Length: 139
Ligand code: CMP
Image (cartoon, rainbow, N blue to C red; front, side):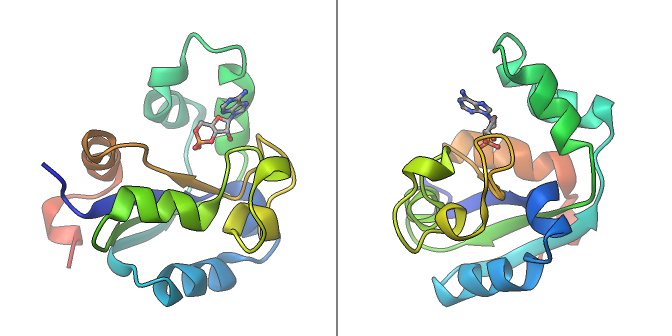
């Protein structure tokens, strides 16, 4: 069942480069409603848990160390067709392949420092949202 919700993080590179405001503006201009929002920092341990699905991938160690290198913004967003529309809005995982006007094309520098995360399925959006937000932190 589609929940019409997705989960995102504005990653340490985009936060450090001062893009929080512009990126949230892009979310809302594209019709996404903010259900939950948090400025926080992952530790090596929590980043490792969040990305556990990638534990066997060669980039896992670098990913975990990058994602715990500075503060992030975590959010749950809502819109019809949220997963697919959000992935279109952010563009390809590798910013070199991201379409013109997408968030990663505008703000990301590399496949590791790729500005934002977006859930790849309704199931993962639910799991990832639950990782950061309790029921009484969603509005
Ligand atoms: P994200 O959508 O947050 O999910 C996993 C992250 O791993 C991905 O964005 C990239 O930033 C990072 N990553 C690094 N190398 C790769 C790769 N070869 N394929 C996919 N993701 C990668």
